[in-house]
Image (cartoon, rainbow over all chains, first blue to last red; front, side, top):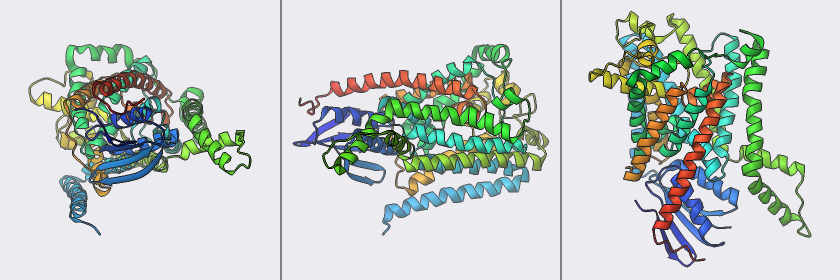
Length: 83
Length: 456
């Protein structure tokens, strides 16, 4: 299963790690955030509940802002603005 | 307003609880002594509810600390252990504890190392695997299956595990710190001092300082400095020692959910020990094998016992399922020390500790359903392979160390057994190795595709 990182528009990217379990969602989130520019938005789509707290803690630690959190039927969508 | 899918989730959550209630009544109707099994089941449910709600996973504690520099689970687990250690000392004082220290030796470190690799590969520790199955995680189901059969095969094949137990592990000393320093039953104050404070709380504080300085400090102090800069007139900022203390406290309380889950799990684990010991007094049994023998049921060991820890435990009851299945298929599993001499192979429905594991899975499922987090996640080939290997490694590590992240670490350290820390260190070393591998693997995968984000 490929890890999907796609550009939605200028400065907005989407990382789809649905189906992945720990530690993959948080690890890919960290690595993708390292690659985008400050101020860019990363939308992470995941369905592993325990990654929710880990991704939140990661963003707090690095100073990234989670601008939107959505969840439905076990799928989570976080929009993260890179610090 | 609740929609149809919400109603469905509620229906399933309460159906599971209702079904477990019916099963509990059935056990009681067969014989009142089976309330013992029912008690294990419902404590399992309580653990499952809290593990899922708090996303409580020992794999995540080490892995997130090493891989992404996040301390929240590391902190949560330590808080759970500190609370539990105080309760354990009080229970021991009143002869209400079921805890026994394990043989102290390097096998705990080696077992922890192998277990640590496995838990990172599988994406969850032994208890984490169970609660994640309750969330519908297919990878964890594979990990559990290989842990079940891997352990059973591991303890029987070639007879070398018997040799290891007989000649090396069993002769080693087993003691709590209070026993070592003051002798048997030294009184509550000395047990609180040695087992709780010296063996548990002080090492935890040292680890917290380590985690703060090495991992968390940089990010937290930056936040504090930003807050100060925003309010300072000239924008100049200096951080002081009181800021460091504030930062340290922030690290401990950053994830309220994890911290609250930690405190509650510590309390529940304490009540579990209390309940099991009281039931032993009530039914006049030292081990549930005595009750099974009295009822003419099979599967007890040569000593007349079955696996019945009297506290939170995960892996042995899983190994028993594998052993039981293979035994029924004609592989003699009762000719080894592990099953034949001490743990037995009772039918799964009469296996007290196994019902605790069942309870954890369904407790977690109920919580996941109520929180709209249940989703069946079919594993990909890649994740299935990691799950398969992770389960095998966790099973082998747990058997060598005589326990997993719960039985060989959490319960042992809180009970005052210093050997639990050896398992913890081993687990950290194993996690480090596996995280490095995972890092390499994920870099490789990100590079393998045409990622448009590599702009600069």
